[in-house]
Amino acid sequence: MRYSAGIVGQAMKWGGLGLFLVGSFLLLGCDKIDFLNPKKSSTAAKIPTLPVKGTVIAKVNNFPITLEELNRYVNIYNASVDLRQDLTPEQKHALKIETRDKKIEYLKTLLVPQAVYYQAALDRGLDRKDEISEGLARYRIAVLAQAMQEEIVKNIEISSAEVEDAYQSNKELFREAEVRRVREIVTNTEGEAKQILIELLQGADFSTIARTRSIAESAKDGGDLGDITKGQQSSSPAFDEIVFSPALQQGQVSSVFKGPKGFTIVKVESIKEGRQVSLSEAFDTIKAYLLAKKQQEELEKAYSKLSSESKIEIYEGEIK
Image (cartoon, rainbow, N blue to C red; front, top):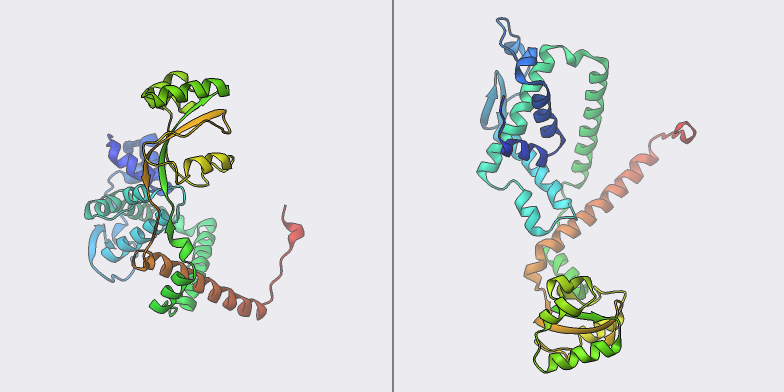
């Protein structure tokens, strides 16, 4: 059986379930999975289903999948992407499911196979296995615990006044730092650096000299350090002092100074001025933060009360 790279890629991207599903097919081959082969007697018609609430967008035998269910899965997935701190906003946007086509692909690669495997498991009586029954019971506990937490925080709201007050009280947190694009030339000796500075002042090309005479790793890129902000080079206050000096403007070259890598000359290629982020720009971010904070506080208060009314025993000595 053949599979497109796109389907495999999406399954890997969307997590363990998809990878398991595709991996199982690839390893076994559909012709070797006997319960997927057509049989004259099928119990598909007897498979239990949940009451249909919403718009049916797919069916696997008599098992419906609704638009509301799809959207719920998509929202959970997108929320998990938002929580990832290792991704840029652009990477998050690329990973998230925000179009109709992506929703359809998610349905076909995850929810439909899930329903197929669910029915096959029931057909084989796997739901009657002790470990499966225990797992389902544990899952029910987790679902109800989550539902209780949602019940506790469901009426919490954040007003516009609260958002504005938080903004005004923490304005310094909503300021974009000045960004400078910088090139560097680094040498082992001060004398060599001074000679290079003379050549630069006489019109020599900075990036060309950086490529041929700088000892820094950036030499291969013509000394380009990219966009940097103050404090990024935390190991060298002197570097920040020179690079972000008001006296060093766009297109200008610094004097020789002792940096962390050696005797250094820098050139400022461009400057993007820092600015204050407006309340309207920061509004949604602040509101989300305040809501999460207030919800957490309410949950902690509720847990404190509930746990004080419960008999909790923890046997740490048994944990090995």
